Picture 1 (spheres, rainbow, N blue to C red):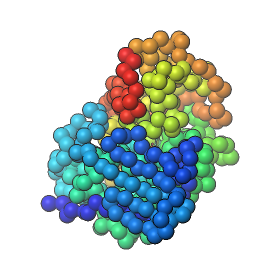
Picture 2: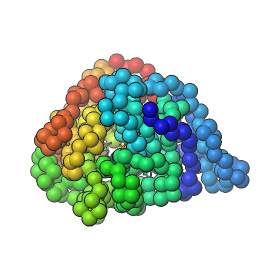
Picture 3: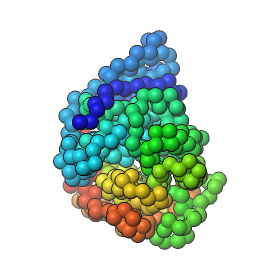
Length: 417
Ligand SMILES: NC(=O)c1ccc[n+]([C@@H]2O[C@H](COP(=O)([O-])OP(=O)(O)OC[C@H]3O[C@@H](n4cnc5c(N)ncnc54)[C@H](O)[C@@H]3O)[C@@H](O)[C@H]2O)c1
C-alpha cells in the first residue's frame, strides 16, 4: 500500500515575490482569473487582509500579496484526454511497487501529464511549482487524491525540502518553455535553470534519487546539421533573445553531468523537441496553440516568415512515455525525445484548416520571422530507440484532433467543423 500523502497546498512567500504577471498576461494586477476551466476558479487579488492564512480551499494574504481561492469538484481522470494515457485510470502499478516521486513544474503543460501518468500507476507524487506559467486547474481532477501533494514554491528555494518525503525519483521540469514567456523574464529563466537545477541536483545527491532533467532541442540553437543527433554541438547565439533559455539549458546539462561525474548521482538528460497537446496555454505564443486557437476563433492563423520553416511536433503522451523510460533506465544521455516527422509551418496551418473544415487560403497572415528562429528542427531518435526502446506513436493529425477538442472545450468555442 502506498503511504498516503496528505494533499496540502503550501503557499510560500517566494511565490508572492515572483512576477505573477507572467501567468496573467496583460490583465489587471488587482484581480485576475488564472484558469478557463469552469470547474475550477483560481483568482489573485492584492487587496486582502493583513494576516496570511492557508487552507486547502483558500489562501489569503496581506497587501501586495495575492489572494488565492481554490474550488474543485472534478472526479479523478474526468478531464483526461483520450490520448493522454492508454492505461486504465488509477491502480495500474508498473510491477515494481509505488515510488515517491518529485515533479518540479508539475502544474505546467508537460508536468501535469506526467503527474497523471505517475498517479495512474499508483505512485506517490509531490509537485513543486511556482505557478509562473503553470495552472492549478491542470491537476484539478486529482485534487482530493491521497497520493498527490502539491507545494507552491520556487525550485530555487530550499525551504520546501523539509516537506518532502524520502524520494526515489525526481523529474526536474520547472522552467518556462515558450519563447514568449522565457523572453519576458530572461533573468528568472536563467536563475530557474541554473540555481533551480543546482538545487534539485543537490537534493538528488542528498536523497540518492535518480533525476531526469528536461532539457531542450534549443541547445542545438539554429542547427546546421539535420537531423540533429546528440553528438552535434549546436549553433547557439550566446547573446541573442533566446540565449537566456538556450544557454541556461546548456549549463543545466553541463551541471547535471558534473554532478554525476563528481558526486556519482544518477542523471538522465532528455533533449525535448517541440511538444503539443491539451493543457498548452492558449496564450503561450507557441505555433500549435496559436494556430488552433486562432482558427477556432475564426481568425487568421499568423505565420511568421514564409511558412517554409519546419518543425517536428511530438504529441505530449509520447514525450511522457519517453521521460518515464529514461527514468526507468540507467541512461545518462543526453538523449533526444521528439518526433522526427518534419512538417512545414505552412503545412501545419493547412492540416489544422482541413481538420476544422475551413478554407486554408483565406485564413493565413504572414509576419516577419523572429530573430534567431531556426529554419529547421528535426531530431534523430536512433539513440532513444536503441537505448530506451522508445519511439513516438501519435500521428500529427490524431494529436491535433485531440488538441483542437481540448481548446474548443476549455475556451467554450463553437464547433467549426
Ligand atoms: N513543451 C515543449 O515543447 C518543450 C520543449 C523542450 C523542452 N521543454 C521543457 O520541458 C519542461 C516543461 O515545459 P512545459 O511546456 O510544460 O512548460 P510550462 O511553462 O507549461 O511548464 C513549466 C512549469 O514550471 C513552473 N515553473 C517555472 N519556473 C519555476 C520555478 N522557478 N520554480 C518552480 N516552478 C517553476 C511553471 O509554473 C510551470 O508550471 C521545461 O523544462 C521545458 O524547458 C518543453
